[in-house]
Every structure is written in structure tokens, then in C-alpha cells.
Length: 102
Image (spheres, helix red, strand yellow):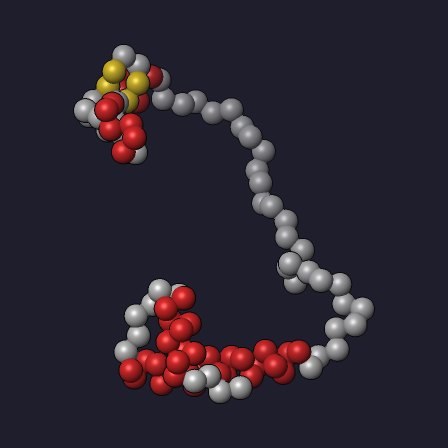
């Protein structure tokens, strides 16, 4: 299935990607090739093959939690550029909270 120039431009607009005339020609060929490959995959008999999200089983690699010494509040606050009581003071990140900004 050969994609037309208009189809490639439409796809670029949907993807919000700017493309040059040279890129449109190249992408037309590449995207058409991808669609042909999907066409070949549709010919494969998948009867009896259960749908899967992963081709191999996934397993989380976790370690046991271990209690370890940590810094004291005083040590943590020692390098804080600004602090308020026992907290590090930072500028507001969200506009709606800008009234709390420094």
C-alpha cells in the first residue's frame, strides 16, 4: 500500500511534526514499507495463540528493605539554601500556588 503525499502530510499534522518536501517523499516510502510489513503479519495464522502484552514473562527485581543509618535533620538542613523551621523552603512550582512563592 503506497501512501500518498497528502496522507503523509496528514499523518505529520496528527503527530504534530514539521516535515520538509524531501522528508515527505522519504517518509512516504518508509511508512508504506511499514504498512506492507503489517500486511504480511496479518497473513500469519494465529489461531490458538493467546493475546499477550509481553512475549516473555516479566519479573520485578527487588531487594529486601534494610534499615540503614541516615542523615539527621540538622545535617540535611545544613546545605539548604533556604529553610523554614525543620523544612527546606522552595519556590512554588505551580502557578495556582504562586502566592506562596518566595
